[in-house]
Length: 493
Image (cartoon, rainbow, N blue to C red; front, side, top):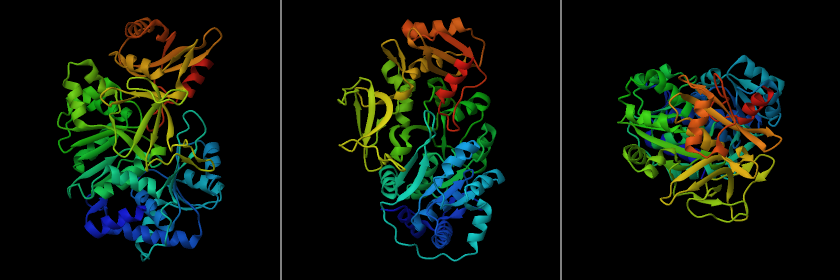
C-alpha cells in the first residue's frame, strides 16, 4: 500500500472535483495527479534522494507529497521558524536533497546547505507546462515522509513515516468518498506538523476540498470560513482560544465539524466553544508524529454529553483524549513495565500498523512486543476514556513525590482571570525541585489568590511556591508548551 494509490483512487473516481485550494481556482484531483507525476519525473532525473519543503503550507505541499512518493523519495517538511544554526544542522542531514523555499531567507538556508531549490509558485507554474509520465516502481516500505519533532525537550529527531504507516492510518480513519461535493476543510497548521500531512491524505481520500490558512489570525480564519463555505476545520487549542476571546459572537453557519489537537485544550475554552456554536460537532484528536497522527478520539456526542451532565466524572471527559481508535492497541504501564488497571497513572504505550516509532539514523524504538513508548503519562478510566497527564520528561520531582505539571495547569486554567499558564519544576537545594508557575492574566488577580485557588483544589505540596505574571508563555506554533524555556527564564530571573 503506497500513497500514490490514494491519489489514483481519487483521480480515477472524482477527477473533476476540486480537492486543493479555493473553489474558483483550486486543483482538481486529476490536476493534482498530473502535477505530481510531472514533478516526480524531474525528481528522478535530478538524482536527489529527498524533497525538502521549507515554506508555509499551501497548494504546493500536496503536490510535493505525492511527487516525492511517486519518485520513491521522502518529503521532508522543515520548520521555517528555526534559527539559522538549528536550520543549518537539520539541512546538513539532507545534502542530496532538492528544495522548495518560500522566501529569500529560506532559500539562503538551502544555498548554505548546497541544496538546489525553487519557489513554490514558480515550481507549480513550470510543472503545468510539462507532461506527466508514468511513475517509477517504489517499495511500499520506503520512507514517505521525514518529520522532525518539535524539540520541546531535546534536539529535534527525524521521524520516518513509511507508506504503509500513512496508508494504514487513512484506511483506518476515513471512508472513501464520504464527503459531499461542496465540502471544504480549513487547515491552520504548518506543513512540518503531522496534522498537515494527515489532512492532505485523509481529505483527499474522503473527496473533501482542502484550504490552507497560511498565517493564522482569528479574523482571517472566520473570513475564510464564510467566503469558502467551510464545513470542516482543524485548529490547535491556542487558536480556538483566540477566536473565542474576541469574536465569539460571530456565527459559522456552514461549519459542521471542528477538530482540535496538538496540545491540551483548557476546559473553559471548549465549554465556551460548545455553547457559542451548538450546531458544530467538536472532535478532540490525540496522536503523535510517530503514530502517523490520531490514535484516540473524543467525538461530538461525548462533548455534548459531558457539557450537559451533572455527573463530575462525565463532565471531566471534556479534559480527556477520548477513546482509542480500533486500529490501535494501548497499554498503560508502570516503571517496571507492568500493565496497569483502569484509573492508575503510568506511561502510555501503543501498537498498530500506523505506528512508525522509527527515527532517522536510530532505527525503531519498539519493545519486543512491538509497542512504542509515547513518553506521555496518563490513564484510562473505567469507561475507556484516555486522560493525558503530560510528558514523562515534564514530571516535577519534589522530594520523593512525582507531580504532573499539567494537573496544576488544569486547575489554574479554571480560574476566571487566567488566560494561559505554564507550570515547571526549578532546581531547589532542599527539595530537588520546587514548583513555580508563570501565568497570563485576562483579568486582575494576585499571586496569593491564585495559590489559594490551587491549594483548595489540590493539596499543599502541589501548590506553586511562586507565581509570576508574563505577557505570554513559551509555546510552539502548534501550541505545545516549551517548558525548558520557561525554566530558563524563571531561573535566570
